[in-house]
Length: 283
Image (cartoon, rainbow, N blue to C red; front, top):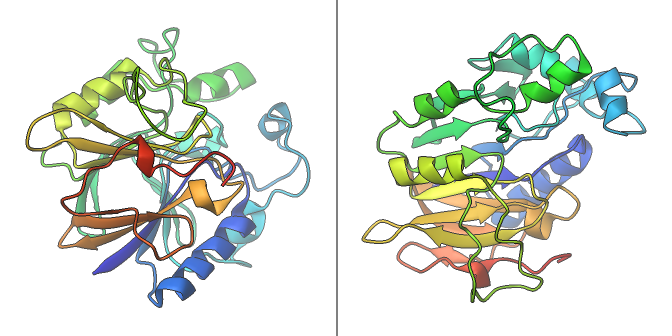
């Protein structure tokens, strides 16, 4: 049985994430096969990068030592793009590539296999002003901002995937929060998420969806019938309780998941997955 960790928006906090992954391995007494980040890593090497300054980041650029090889994660780290990234190098590897030893960008949109599981992924968020526009090199801050928006043809490409166990998104799918739902208060707004992501869930019917962006941990199920889709929304990397979700897989199927650095499962195969399974805000 393989152990995989999912991480919410890192926003440059690589040293913290490294410590969490090592602690998770120690708690489980097992090496992580993989860590998956759902966007907004901010893999800036230089603290003075103009795009990083626009995002009002201060202090050292923590990715620098990982890029140089001075530091390393305890397991391979793969990620999809968010809407706050160092877009210049990512534009040169739209089909994916390695940014540092053990740190790999999946690409803007597509399908792959991770930990023997069939995975589809869509980087970025929805913006109506960018959805039909061509993707241009991020030569200006405005073009870099647009690089964090997915395009129509990328959504259509992901929709061609088949037999998907896990769908990776940056933003939430719309419809996850509904009236009368019971879960940790305060309840997220019903308008969070985008319809394009929801349509992908309907088309692919994955077993699981992981996403971030809204900086709130949440849980819920989309779809009806014999194969519902369980959605885990990850908080930003402030505290591990809502920003880390560990998963155990057997033959490419997710059979057990848990929040944070605890070994206590929040869900096991055959059980429901509802908002009541989400950790409370600030946990």
